[in-house]
Length: 248
Length: 247
Image (cartoon, rainbow over all chains, first blue to last red; front, side):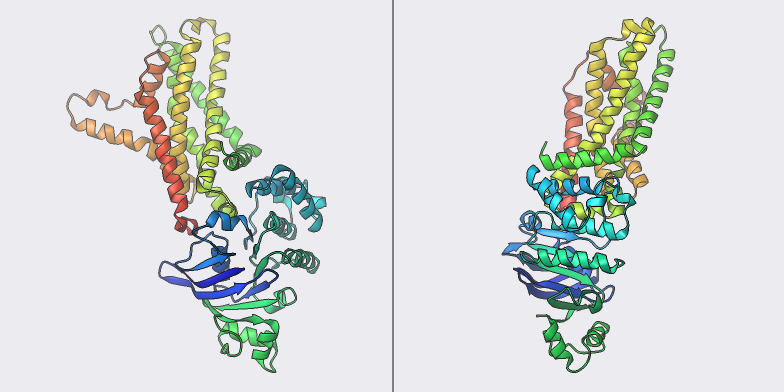
């Protein structure tokens, strides 16, 4: 169980996130929606222990992200927005290196890398240098890295932007499979990107939670209006988050 | 070395030697030390200084430059490509990251010293006239002192690389960090009459000469090891200060 409790993050005088609270359980795939600058990446970086909250706490199965950072990170898989990878390594070498870095034993690392390469259809490019790969394949490699060590919390920052439909489908299947034993958070700009994949949504606007709930809850809150239009209004600040749980 | 630090060191060293930059660096270092060695030998022709001490004197001034070049990319490149985010969100301790990166850069710098040593051994065979002053013990002792200096300069470089966002700034900070204490010492000496003769004197050179000629003192090794230890400790503390990650 992931608990985000009244988390605030400031950068100097600017508040990027303000009193954000929500929970996610194993099996949940939470879509974090919002426009650019809403705080999605900051929220995911806080949960990945890359940043420290200015106030509040983040807990995963009772482990605090700050007090027990190392243990927390052992159970977290993270794919950053820019999908940074080591260009001079081949896909296979990179995944094996990352598995070992995450503390996976020698034999288990080989097995896990082999399984993930198969699941994400990376077999053909396994021996190729990462620097020569297309963005889609890089993202799949990044996703494979995030899935190493069977994380209990999987954080994917805008994983499907600039990725074609077939790639999206393949990645979605992997994420759904990973959600059997993990809480998954996927960030994106619009419901159309994440609608089919996510079981719940968290809408951020200017660093605050504008709405949260399942698709049905958000649909009920939208009344007769289209959910996409309602979410677009929420994100743009043209609608109040009545009905859906605000900052829950 | 811990296995995680070992993994990080292996990746960093591999990255340095995958392209041509690592080899260019080592070749440049060899060219400079060879040129300085030849010049110093020529100047000391008929003198009493043993060739092993002259070799040490030829290598020591270029070590800070090699350390600065080897360390400047350690963190700057990871920041630029974003892989720093991946590294710091993996379950690794800050001291594993610092130790791994330091070890990779130190291996490169020590590789440079070893190549210079091989170069000297080759010269000894090519020019047997030098044999008199070229004792193996002297060379080994000078190398030992150079390795200690390499550890200290590389640790200072690692700290500079962590502080600076750009590689050029990191290299400049390293050279300043190494030179500043000695510049300060020279500035103080300039005000003290009777000490002015030592104004242009750089103690690390003297340490190498002393070691090569069999004059051993505990002070230089303690100084270099303490310097390396302090710089690496600062690196770990800085990396633990999370706000550095957002820079």
